[in-house]
Amino acid sequence: NAGVTQTPKFQVLKTGQSMTLQCAQDMNHNSMYWYRQDPGMGLRLIYYSASEGTTDKGEVPNGYNVSRLNKREFSLRLESAAPSQTSVYFCASSEWASGISTDTQYFGPGTRLTVL
Amino acid sequence: GESVGLHLPTLSVQEGDNSIINCAYSNSASDYFIWYKQESGKGPQFIIDIRSNMDKRQGQRVTVLLNKTVKHLSLQIAATQPGDSAVYFCAELSLLKLTFGQGTILTVHP
Image (cartoon, rainbow over the protein chains, first blue to last red):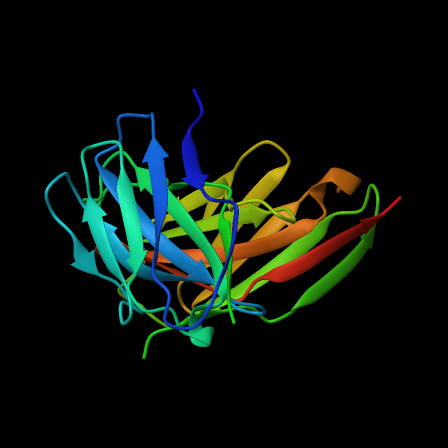
């Protein structure tokens, strides 16, 4: 059981370039999430997918798009990268995002992105 | 807006001591709180959680206390070990979303 995996681990982009961050989970979880973590701050939710076929905006969605490709995979796309998007990006999954259940989120190892 | 924050950004303790990490929250409607541990270069790792209808919950070497009157959450680590050195985040769950605090850096000296 690999848990939550993310690729790539590191990436450097130039302003205006695009890229897709990949995330996969093998725990048969229904819900998946993308967060960013900036120095001195906690994680902030970018987008989430409560179940396969649905996606919703989180706290900081501007400049990002997501795709829930199937139950296992949830990708995050930067169409035109900006220096403000330099951050560490974490993907997470949980069994169910009912908002009521005590539902633990499991995190991947992160992708360190630098936009020059 | 609603926020979750930590009183102390850093905490240094000696190995074997007990550690207490504090967290203040402002969303009184949150019904679920979680503590995460994040080691350098890794993603957050679940430690312990507590529902809003509870005051205390114990795990292995860890205890979480919730004081809803003053909107305060704490994480107690007993007999702290060097392997406990990490950043600790509290988070609150409201509807489908986790809101994280800034984090406390815990350093354990041998």
